[in-house]
Length: 179
Image (cartoon, rainbow, N blue to C red; front, side, top):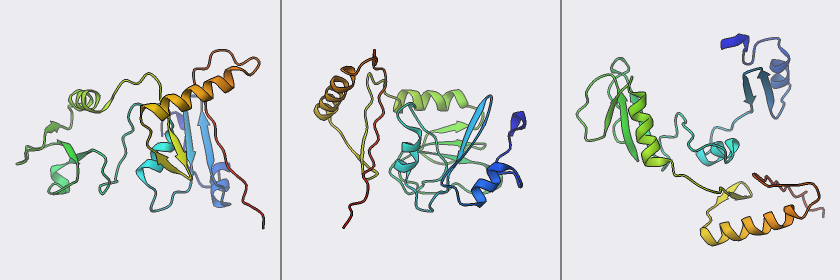
């Protein structure tokens, strides 16, 4: 990795933490932050996206071919034929013309792909709110979004020294009930 930052290098403290079974290990440098967290083989796209929070307009991932999320296939001639039928395939980035009705971009056409994503998938939002209960995302329509936002902002704005609230993160983990 650039700037001398290495991930999980044998003998380093971060490597020792991971080997000892830490739940998460962070590595930082002046210009990067890396979080290493054991993943389960069945991690969902929603769980992965949740790790990033609400600060990003779009998150690009690799894999997740079976999900209902929109997909862009990256096809290279030397790898072999395209993958075939992919659910919700919106584009193919390729180094050769393909016989398909799916929109194609050159591998070098990053602007074209960025424009496709920006115009088709990034929606400006004034306020963002998400609700997860037991790690399951709960879809919110306009009314519950507004209601929850107003209740939370009313509660925290009454606290001394809070000032203007631009973002608010609340996490609740209940202790297991004792028998």
